[in-house]
Image (tube, rainbow, N blue to C red; front, side, top):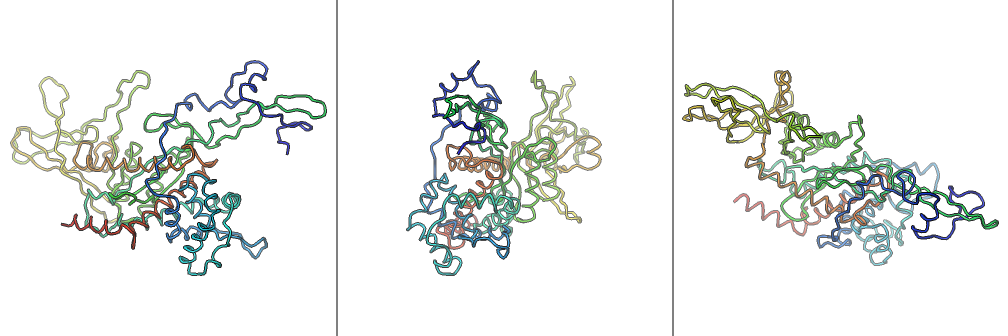
Length: 535
């Protein structure tokens, strides 16, 4: 079959090496961005770190069994609306839930080819039919055919029926992910309230999936074509397949990656595999589109606040700023844990233009005649302004005592942070409370309290206990890469890549319930942990 870009009457010549193809081009043989297979930017050529694939000691067949025995797997198919069979068409060979089982199995195996090669085994496919029949309550012959589907069925089903219901599938994952977390003893609203309970914190982070190819959109590759009748030889520029939704992103370790940025939220327990992915989304990052990472995060947090009343707080990176922190505290009643962003600097000189400090309030300490105490905010903490004779700005540390939240009549929340304040003479002290949510007076002063007066400031004991939990979601990011071929995207297009992440979330949640859910093989470990904590 002649490609569309090939002139009529010509055929593609035998393949040559890249050096031979470049030498055949007239003029400069070096690649030019936009006209050859040059990367989108030189920054995209940064050497990538290689890491040995780690399956955490779990074979794909065990994950396949966990997915088949997870009731939420079959519920995904109910979200997809199929065409009315009465309007015609061939009968379907496989029920739609098979696609979701295979989508998770593909991620567990690491590649589509490996997954469908494994399914050609009669014994393995017979096991799939037996477990599915047991879950549905029919005989194996009634639930699935004797032959496993092939890759073409998998890709066609995704293109025709699945990808158009992506938003509904994301919502279904959040609903079923929260349910899976509850089955594992996570996000339990009935547990005694404890700010240090890591099982009731949502951990969120962005994840850049490297593009399957580094070619920029519109790139071409020189190809030699020959007219068999006349022997005429032409050099044509064949279009190179590229990732249309890829952009350059700077990762947390300062690497520049050309790929698609996704976002996910997890909840983790202290045991291995006892965690659930409860939200996923695509970060479009289009200017003016309100789809940057902070917008995507808050859109999903609003859904989770409704679905998971057992959440105490959220642990994020520096993407959470004043507006996001205030909404979490005021509308959800959550306790946000996030680092404080540095003050604004000149991009060219590095000079600090705006410091993260300023006056906050003036209080009187009972019993002290040495004058009022002036409180300032400094890098998210409340500090004491120390009066000195030479006019220098000297700030003294205060002891953080805790934070508390109260519910208002209109359903919103207010939050306070408590500090131990020592008077100017040093003989008297009191516990002073500061609001962490701005009011109209703060807005007039251009003071964002949620950003500058943190409920859990950096350096406090609670911050030091909870902020290291972010390493758990970094482990999830690494595991996502480990289950991708060459640590690159398995598909083209942001929608298909997000469906691949859905498959990863499916087996993560299913295997967590397989171990720690009701009747799980490691359920006793959770019970033992709860007994030790109660004692």
